[in-house]
Length: 229
Image 1: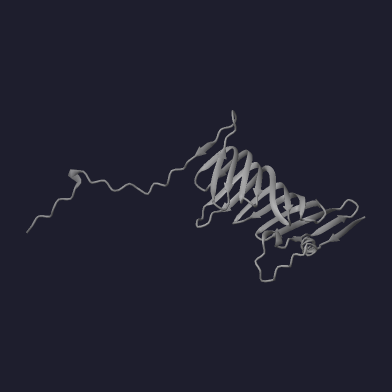
Image 2 (image 1 turned 180 degrees about the vertical axis):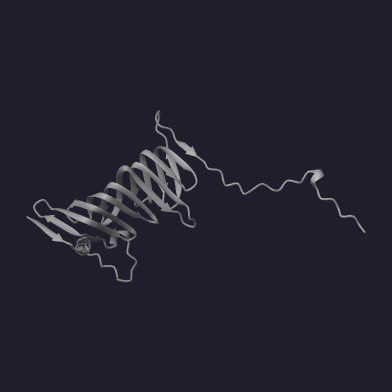
């Protein structure tokens, strides 16, 4: 039997209740309200314009959905998954997918598969023609951005791995290769070439010319001293 909820806001306490129940069963005391929550303890919130739950197959489908946990946020036109158990599950998002990654980074694609492990967002694999990534670099107005057919965002490592027609820029220089890795916390780039295949290609942009120092005027063009009275 399927249950449809139109224009529903799912502030999902189910994942938290599951985690709290497991902790209580194990005899683990609940964290005080003033304690700093660890990644697996942060609440997962699901907002959707509509939802449909099929209890026979234990599947759930959302439209215009936003799932957030801490600084990570996933939104898309549609999402479907097996159940609302975030302890260990895979969600598929389709249509205008956007993932906000820390710090100040985001990914955009046509489709994404997000993996939840231990009640936290662990990994997102985004695909598109192309999938895109960008980050406003800290302490600078420069934007690091890149695109590829597939981008894997590893939340634990704080990295994005671009593969298949991958291109990446740190705001000044450009790099292409079969596999590019960008660390969004350290703001560093790494490229890996394929044995016997595509090579890494780097375009380095020289710094802007600030102007040469003025050259001395030719001897004949130098101003002559004024005659003394």
